[in-house]
Image (tube, rainbow over all chains, first blue to last red; front, side):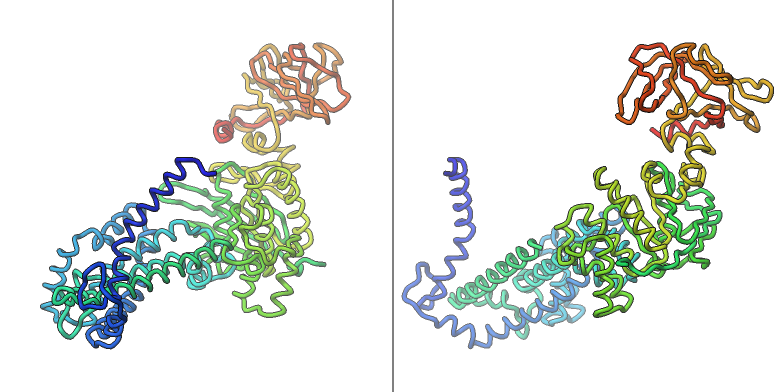
Length: 261
Length: 371
């Protein structure tokens, strides 16, 4: 029989969880609305908004754009961020600290400020409304997340294992491939995931550098909801919610399996 | 025989080697020759340069000046992964993401050894350290002693002509340490590989080594067998570092070519005198001194120092006494089983012949470094 404080704490945690989840969960019934309205509670039931998402080229194109951009960003930011993490971790303590502070500025600078700066530069460079422009801007925003995730694994990585591998006959590249990389892989993977999500749901910079010919999903959601209250937004929200939940559950299961061995 | 193939051990030749880190000199002009197949221990307190020497041989750091040859070839500038030397670390350094079997197979895979040949050699190496049943376990499922045995198998599986060990038993408890010392000794005997072993534990050095190099402050004080170092220390530091000892200091004079030292109310005669004008000290070994009742059982030529028993410890194999001499020094005396029994407070004479003592030049660093 658990004691009273434990029961109380459990109930409190449940309350916080409900508060955190409620806005997300509201979206799910709305996506099955029978009418073209975002009213809550919804009236009637239909799959039409899901059908609209998969058939309307505005939605499918923006979704594909976001997916492509986020995948490229995940790859580029993970490579660059991982290399940066090595540099920061293995530089002298002071230099490393300074570099790190510099590298995570995109995370602390207000998004709008960054967006204005990027927009101004992109106008001159003709990068507005281009995939390259989106990839560059999102990579910059994603690198700090990779840096932090990989640096965390590097800090608990025992460098003496590299010395040992070297004494057993492994050159530097082989040491990295067979010892360092496998051991910091969880950090790199979670960095990649963060990078993907950072790009996939980025809206502020995207609003500035978007064009009628290149829209990402968040931009499409935003314009569709400001122009007409289209419940397709709720359908998209529900799909993204399910997709991210699956990724997180998969991640947890993977982590548990690794933790056992 | 279950062990990896008997291989000819490599000789190591270190000449006038120094290692500097900025203004700090970790190793100052050392000379060290290690014979093929020898078990050489580098002994000294922390910061004395023994681990730096090991790292130089392994190729983990570069020599600042001097020469280093392994197997007759200069290895200056050769990176560690091309030296073909086995290394065992104090912290085991097993790869946590690989099973025991994979860990031991690692150096073989790097050398292009595959399939059945690799399996056979891994099994042979694990047999040698009696860890065959653990091949499918991960390192974090093993005890410290088991991990170190696996590390030893991994360092020997590719038949290196030279094995370096950096305080490999430092993290283990006493019983396990003593057992593994004998295992290491057995493996050395079976393989014929040159072993270089770093420790700060003088007992461990005496148990294992063919020869011991005693390090102090970045220099080698003396190289010799355990017996040579114990019976004929070249410096006060070596005398104090190896085994138990009592150091006598007092005003000295030379009488008929012999050294006479005054200790409180008594005088000690030592044969001969030190060259130069170094201040002499006298080093006594506890088991080469005896306790007698004051004035009793006199033997011609023996030295007698009067004092009072301060501590009497029964050790089973004998007794150990601490005697406060008349100048305030505490002398340690061991008496074998069946000797006379003394109690705390008893007035006694500490006796020894001039042949039982060692006359050495005084060295202030010998005291400082030991604390």
